Image (cartoon, rainbow over the protein chains, first blue to last red):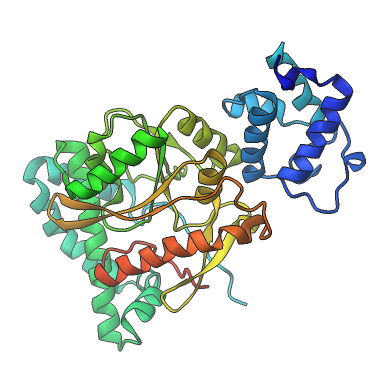
Length: 92
Length: 298
């Protein structure tokens, strides 16, 4: 059984936030400070195009889910919630 | 304070002038177009706004110049650039261009691609970079190129490849997801590494021709995250309708670049500096085939 499907919905959010903080080098940001529905890019976490590269790679490495193009990315990158939904949908 | 002028991919000339050249190429061929080009370049070189564009490069590459010397260098830069554009139009219209290279470089790229099943070719706006890539016919791989396609630009690009994916860095997310997809699909991905776009926090300062310029870390970041080797390559236009393709350097980036002791963009400085050093070497060897017509040091 793959490790990636062992996450429950609650700890999937937490795990994702931990990975974002670690992989994107988000200094001075804690898991609790990242709102589930806050935008990842722009006014929310303030991420940008190179951070998107990191997210695509971390989602693939840790959850075995591919974000193939901007169409998929546009939906997935809205917030932590939408990213979790995207991962769950692709893992189902 | 002098406002920093952004680089634009738009052609200096209107569509009408381009069409005149395309017509002459069809009727008189390449050398007919060169003949007209000589007078056009002479005219443009005398325009203060146009001759100002490469002034800083000329000063740094050739030293301080008197008025006549600066005009001569300006003319030669635009003359070589113009001949490259004519060759590019000839390739598009008549399908005529020859790119050559060494067997050693060919083997090098073949081995790199065979080992990794993907490859980033990092080049600059020098020589005959678009046409030079026709040399890569021997690589049986999908090919993609990252190239700014601005609205309103009448200049037509041309590659010898039958099928090529053009990724626009002005697209959402800077085209980065499309670059990742291309590499996942085992492509050879061509990126120009000498112009900055987008977020300034993803640019780093490196040494170039006696000063500091900013280069983007995007190619290196994508190479590191996808564990793809980077081949720094340049194409020199050596005569009418012919270019020489050359592998200048191979750069391997650890996957965790930017996540160790040196974090973020600064971790990519050594790699950007390697590219800059090769670009400078190119300028020393081919001083009139450098087409960044703006003050990179500003």
